[in-house]
Structures are given as structure tokens and as C-alpha cells.
Length: 343
Ligand SMILES: Cc1ncc(COP(=O)(O)O)c(C=O)c1O
Image (tube, rainbow, N blue to C red):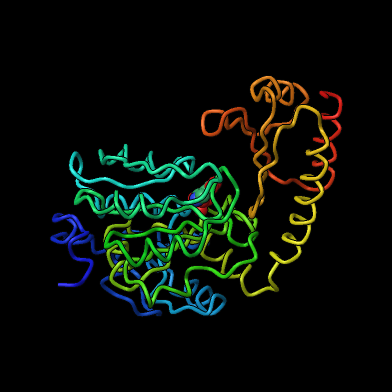
């Protein structure tokens, strides 16, 4: 029994996973008559590698992390869903979240019929680590989601608070780093050997500019990765995405040039927004968006839509806020022009 054994649902521990044709025979060259595929070469007539070995080798080289620590999902949303399904018995177990935060954690729990324990962020949008540790001691809590930098508030979570949570809980601790490339801090993947209960989520949807490809990463110790691999749909990353990402990742890293522009624009937009009379607060951002408190979020949102500019009204998460994704320079100028007219 491992130190994490108590976290997995009984049916997951007992599961006999689906065994695909590609699981049963893994050689490279053969006359393929095993998977009921169409034999005529369309370019996509074969099922893809269920474990994405070639792509994982490239990613692990790029990130300087072992392949055995990596799970690839159909977006990091797939990893969120699988983690909840692996750990939470419906009607019995719970996840812990720190609102306001990314909405999919709750949705994944609701789909599973799991409970949601909330320990809200403090008024400065930081983690209340002591409260989290206390609440996570309940037997029903199986995993804690920490989003850093957090969506929709934009800020990084304090490292010491996360250390405290990791060292004082025996639930899974999932740190969602979807926006970490905009934060200029080291990733928590470096700490996976230290904390067997740590899972780090990253994605190709943000800094890499590949939201349409649907590719997310979960980094964790091999026991957790094996559980995710056992319960995922067999061919969860399609061949097209595997090929495209493998190609992209062997070229010079495009994120540097994107990041430079996005960070520069973030700074300028932040400054310009602060000058507007109806803007009450522009929150600190370590991500590729700004959370802005205004006099009337709904009115401003409706006005911008009429101007053909779509932002996100986050009033339901933080009163009278809108979330603005940093666009290309001319898009940000268009936004500022519209906001100046509104003023
Ligand atoms: C915090 C956070 N995590 C995960 C995701 C989903 O990422 P993916 O596109 O990899 O599913 C998002 C998307 O907006 C996000 O904001």
C-alpha cells in the first residue's frame, strides 16, 4: 500500500482498464490488422499512440522533467475531471477550492456528485493556509485545488502558504499553473519528488497559443500518473494534435516573443486603465489578463459588446469586476479608445 492509496476510490483501485489494440502490440512495423481501422492511408486512418510517447519525450526534454511524471490530457480540463473521478465517491467525498477561482473545479465535482468545501481567498486574494489545512483534515476531503496564478484574480499564491498546505495535508494538492508562464517564477514541478501528494497542471492553451489543439499537462509522481492513464479514454490525444505539437516543440520557443509583447501590453494597459474615472481598482496580475473593478460592471460590459469588444463580466466572482484578456497591441488600443469614450 502506498502513501496515497487511501485517496483512490475502491472501484478505481479494482478497475481493469480498457486494453486497446495499441496496448496489446507495441511494435513499430507490422501489417496492421488488429484495430478495425480503415487500411487505406488517409493520413489519419490509424489510431494514435495512447500514451503519446514521442510527444512526451519532447515535452519532458523541454521541461527537464522525467517522462514518468507526465500525463497528457485533452486540455488540462481533462486532468481536472479525471482527478476528481479517481478520488471522490459520489455523495461521500469532496474537493476543496478557494473562491473566487477557476470554475471547472466545481463543475467537475458537481458532475461527479462530489461535495465542494470552500475556503475563500483572503481580502487580498491570498490563501488562508491555516484554514485550508484545518478544513482538509476532514476525512471526506480528497483533493485541494490551488490556482496560481489564480483565475479570475490574476495573482500568484504565496509560496510559503502552499508549502504549509503540502506538508500538512495528506490529500492530493493540485496546483493549477495554467498562467505560470506570465508570472516569472519557478514552477512547482520542481517539487514533485519532495511531495508525493502534489499534482501540477500546465497547459499549451495560454503562453503557447495552442488553445485550439486541446493539450494539457499533469505532472506528478508515477503512482498518480498511472492512475490517470488507467482511467483516461484510450486515445485521448488525437494524432493531429500529437503531430502538430511535436513539430512546434522542436522549433525555437515562440512563447518568448508572445510573452514579451503580452507583458509589455499588460503593464501599459494597467497604467491606462488606472487613469479612467470609472475604474476603481486594477488588481495586480501575474497572468495574461487583468481583473478590473469598475463602478458598474454590467453596464460597462454591455457597452463594450455594443462596440464589438468582448470582455468577461466577473461580477458573480468579485463584485463589479470585468476580466480583460491582454490582446494584440491594436486590440488593446481599440479597447482603450472605447473606454475613453465611455468615460
Ligand atoms: C486556471 C485554468 N486552468 C485550466 C484552464 C483550462 O485549460 P485547458 O485549455 O488546458 O483545458 C483554464 C482555462 O481558461 C484556466 O483558466
